[in-house]
Image (tube, rainbow, N blue to C red; front, side):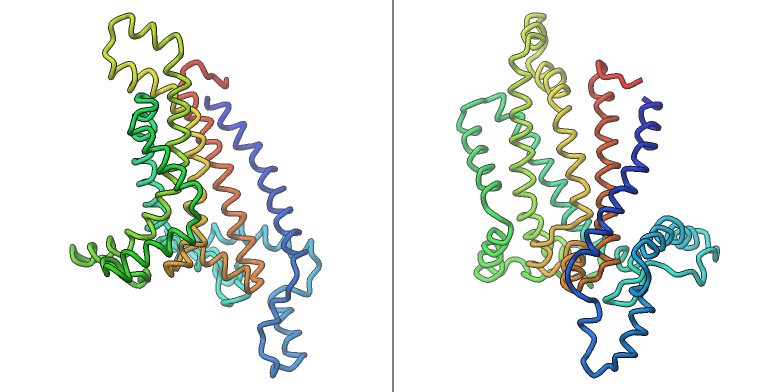
Length: 335
C-alpha cells in the first residue's frame, strides 16, 4: 500500500503540471481585457504602465513560468513565514489579483471559512442523511419508505438550486420570518447566542445544498446495497445463524461502501469550490462567489489559482479513495 501511494503521488506531479498548462492557455484564449474596467479618463500611457505592472506585456511562457514559481515556491514560503515567524518570502512577488490588486491566496484564505461553514456542513449533513436512507431503502425494497425515499431523491435531482433556494427564501424568510435570507459573513461566534444566530443563517443554504447531496448518495447507496444483498456470501452468513443486523451492517455494508467512497471522496473538492449559485443567492461571501466575480472581471490569476487548487484537491482525494479501497476490502492489494 505504501509503494502504491508513493507511486501515485509521483505520477500526480506531471498530471498536475499538465492540468495547469491547459488551464493557463485556455484562460489566455478567453476574450476580455483586465484593463477594460479602468475608467476612460485614465490616459493610455498610464494604462500601459498598469499592464506592465500586472505582467500582461510579457510572453505567455514567461507568464506561465512566473505563475508556477509564485504558486509552488513563494506562496509556501509565505505560509512558512506565517507559521514560524520567518522572513523567507519578504519582498518577493506573489500571485496578485488583477481585480483587487492584493495577493490571491490571502483572499482565498479569507473566503474559505465561509464556504466550509455552509457548503462543508451541507455535505456532512447530506451524507449523514443519505447513508441510512440508502441502507434502509435497499433492505426494505419497494416498501413505503423506499418509495418515499425515491420520490425525495427525484426531487433533489430534478429541482435546481436556484429554484429550491428561492422557494425556501419565500417560505421560511419572507412568509414565516424564521430565518434571515442574507448570510452575514461578518458575524463572529463568541457565545451561545451568537452561535444560535450562526445556525439560523446557515439553515436555509445548508438545506438547499444537502438536498442534492442526499439525493445523489442515497441512490448510490441503495443500488450498491441491493447488489450485495443478493450475493452468495450473504446467504451463507444467514445460514450460519448470524444476526440479521450483523449481516447487513457489517458484511453487506462494508462491501457496499467501496463504490460510495469514490462518490464521497470526489465530492469533497466541490466543498472547497463552493456552490456558486447558492452562495450568490444567499449572499455567502465564499469561494464560489469569488470565482464567479473573478470570471466576470476577467481576473485570470484568481481564476487560474482557484481552478488549479480544485484540480489538486480532485487528484488528492482520488488517491485517498483508492487507498480506502484497500482498507475496506482486504481482497484489494496494490503492492
